Figure: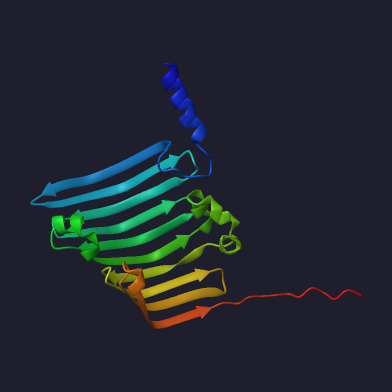
Length: 212
């Protein structure tokens, strides 16, 4: 009908290349491979070998792979591989809770353990979700090189322990951090305890040559 054709045309017009819109998805090239899915004695296990999909905005999930184990008191994601455009990570995530009801009603009470030994962040990928960042000169500078590193943390929203954060930007700028964050969900009471931190950077500046 004309109305349906007009509605479809309006949706098509709202599809802006380079801008991701969760309310207007246009997924193509969907590829999913899952194996070893089982549910036994309140325990779920599954292996996602690969999930890949592309959105009309240009955001491309190149790969999502993981091994999942879950029960009424824990969720474990191991062998996690995630690659979106030029950003990627490998690692594992574990969460423990008293019950599924408690997880749904009070998810912030759950304990969390995250281990990401391989991390690569391309700041330019963030522009798909927030195009205005392109106007920020600091973001423009950061986007010139990827951020690489590793992250290990555990705890709860009340106290999150950062065992190891190592980030590298280029060959001469790096950040090493260990510590903890208290009251993450209460901005007025948020407190950080830094056990050790190291920031290394080398900024080169060449002054203009004097005129004759």
